[in-house]
Image 1 (cartoon, rainbow, N blue to C red):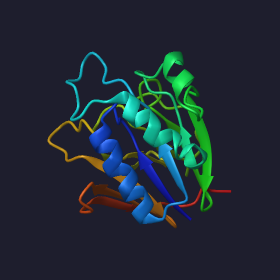
Image 2: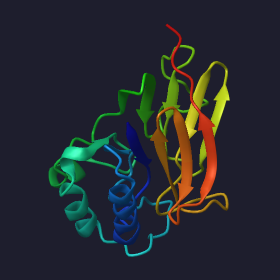
Image 3: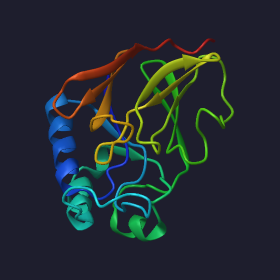
Length: 185
């Protein structure tokens, strides 16, 4: 099973289109969006080609392929126009025998963990900083930001194929890769 993870589109039609082209080409079975879909937020500059209405149309066309969680910039108004659920603060996902606690990162993150067991995987966005590391018995992942990367990072997304999690640039260059271990039974 192949899953594409992305975060922090922030209403950029340009980067959303690039992401969806990558998603189609990758033949991933699902697109997991880790929040901040339409609005850029008061602390960010407008992303390239900020056009939330175009992003709405692009994502709604794939509504049956998307799992999403609420980011700190996502609201009930956004849910009124998006045809897939976005207001859950987290999702528990199981892919390839791996257990993921998927959230945006503004509530739960590496510094404030949700209830997790050894071997679980926390995946979040929010910081716009990519991450893939094992720490204290869990794995913390962040695919970075599709449209507004920070910390000198490139625009990125991630693919999970089997138990390998790979963070890639929108041009397809591997930035970071980690082999994930199945949860301890």
